[in-house]
Amino acid sequence: MWYKKSIAKLVSEAEQSGEGTLKRTLSSSGLVALGIGAIIGAGLFSLTGIAAAENAGPAVMLSFIIAAVGCAFAGLCYAEFASMIPVAGSAYTYSYATMGEFMAWIIGWDLVLEYALAGATVAASWSQYFNELLKIFGMALPNELLYSPWVEHHLADGTVFTGGIVNLPAIIIVCLLSLLLIRGTQESSFVNNILVVLKVAVVILFIALGWQFIDPANHTPFIPVNEGEELLKSGQIGFFDFFKEGYFGHFGISGVLRAAGVLFFAFVGFDAVSTAAQEAINPKKGMPIGIIGSLLLCTLLYVLFSYVMTGLAHYSEFKGDAKPVATAFAKTGYTFLNTAMIVTIIAGYTSVILVMLLGQSRVFYSMSKDGLLPKVFSDLSKRQTPWKTNVIFMVFVSLFAGFVPVAELGHMVSIGTLFAFTLVCIGVIVLRKRSPNVDRPFKTPLVPLIPILGIIVCVLMMASLPLESWERLGIWMLIGVVVYFLYGKKHSVLRKEIESEKK
Image (cartoon, rainbow, N blue to C red; front, side, top):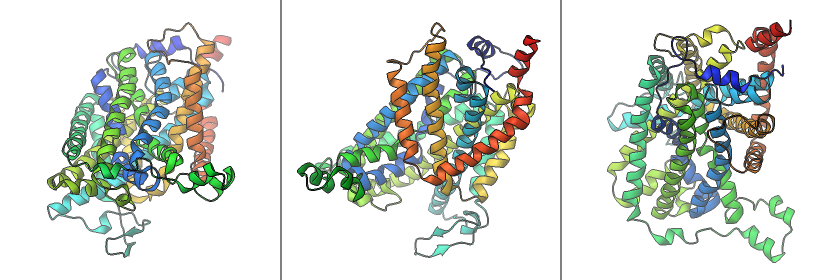
């Protein structure tokens, strides 16, 4: 259970090329685009308004910076591992080298949940925006083909629709993107680059056109007053009363911090870059650039976007607003961009689904190569893609998106991601102690401080999630443990090699 893969063995695997291995086609710019494709999605267009209206007001841009710093702790740790061990599999591979086979299996099983469920969740939402676009051209789909049988949807007239049959667009988009991944990583990267250029262009257009219509009055006060914080300062209430009475998080400094927790999940996705390490042309240079570069670029866009958005409309106008970006941009008079915004959101969702499906298949590929899963998951096509894994998860994820009310399971994506972040941060500390002389093309600064801060941030975020998320994660992990002992442990390639050497 605790056998570890040597760094030398992992590096040797990474240097293999030719038939039976993943093809190196991703440049540094392609990796940055992959990261942006995974990060910029619904979070920017929906969470910004929610966090401004309910927590931080105009200071939501500070919340983005705080959330980005929290992500950066984990991102720097990912960058060190990805440059040092440029193998597909992300946190699964890193855990194999630092904490042993069983922990690697646990994190690999966890990542499958993260990527597959994220893909299904985003696909289910993608269909709603796609239908909004169809409405513009008078071709809207009936509600029966937009919702699963177990979803209750509140229509615009206030009635509740429960007659869904299947979320057909969600199934179609998952299938199309899976077929694109089967076609090849280079082709998938090309499509992702187009989607990234499209959505970044419209975000920049929103910032550029909206800037001249900013009303400074909407940014005053920059941090709305939290009544509880004022009472706490004056000594009228105690520290515990501040939390007990529900003051925490509703504006003031605590509101900025609460919003940072909400917006943390707008950055989730950069870790998917590390799953493509074995397909990077120059992983030692490209992986740190892809991970850190995508984080920095997205943070800059997020801060500018939120500044313009809260300057165009008063933050209170975003309360309960399902389309806060449209509400803000309506103040400019450039109504033509509303359609462009819908197209951009669709592009954003599409690239997120694409990267999630890619990440999931690469994790299973690595686990299968190690013998922990059946060989079918590491079989490559002539185009050097794990096509059988893509097909299997095309069916699984599309059915999940089409029939399961995945919105209720969204927190599971977050808890799975944060769990992976935590183990990667721990792994950097462990490997610095155990293998201090290993070549590290990129080194996380201030170790162990940066990894420890990353662990603290991730654990605090996990603690803030609902109990149901922990219960569901526990059930999924229990299933994984059973699979490991029934199959993985018996077929482990590393275990067989070590026990053969002992004989």
